Image (tube, rainbow, N blue to C red; front, side):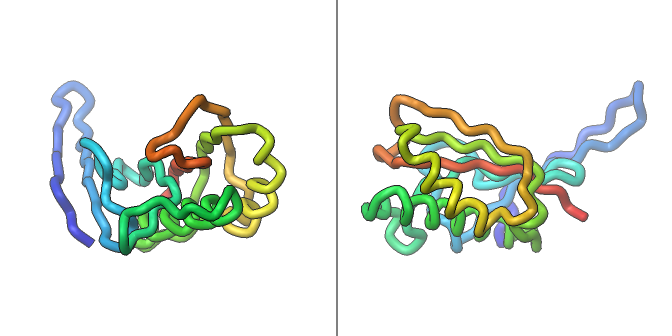
Length: 143
């Protein structure tokens, strides 16, 4: 785990401390643009979107929606692990897909990873980075 930065801010009016920590991991693919893989804020971990990039090559897994869904879920799991969290700690996911015809296949695989059924939003979009078929982001709670 590599911590890139920690920012602490004290609000004089409320007298609270806000701490935000940005994390990175070699177990998940490198980020493509200017963002972090995850951010810890208070007791929540915000995982940035993950597509089906192979962490070893940073290349898109080309084998269809099933394998891309599995890889995106594995990438989210790797990011969470840097916080010593599991997929069971996820309280919310957002899934972006390139075609609604894939919903049933995604659901069949998704339930194997997110067994506690976190809240979820699923959105069809015109295109995703590297022409991926699926993109997943997650919010997890530190217990």
